[in-house]
Image (cartoon, rainbow, N blue to C red; front, side, top):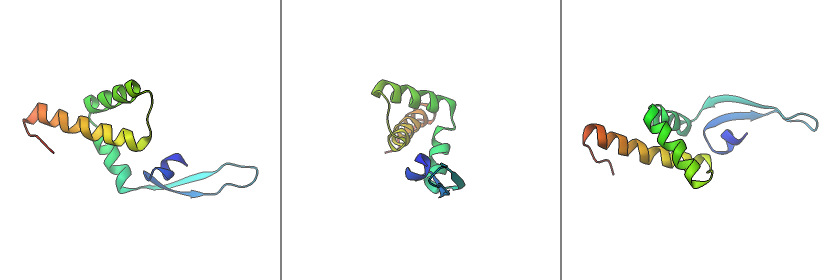
Amino acid sequence: MLLHEAGLIVAQDLCSMSDFDWRPKRLTIRGHEFLDTIRDREVWRLTKAGAEKAGGVSLAVMLEIGKAYGKQVLKDRLGIDLQ
């Protein structure tokens, strides 16, 4: 449900009065972007460390942290500054 609410997946709410049931259908473009961003082990390590240092963050903020570290890692590896 939280991944759906964050816009990372499309899911179907099949909850009833007595049962919590969400069914994932597919990743959204935002979900693909998040996974592509953190696919690199160094970027994921830095992203987790940044989130921990901040004291826990939302998935949306995790995505932004991952993007920032991804750009930093690319700059370090390729010498390209992506703004």
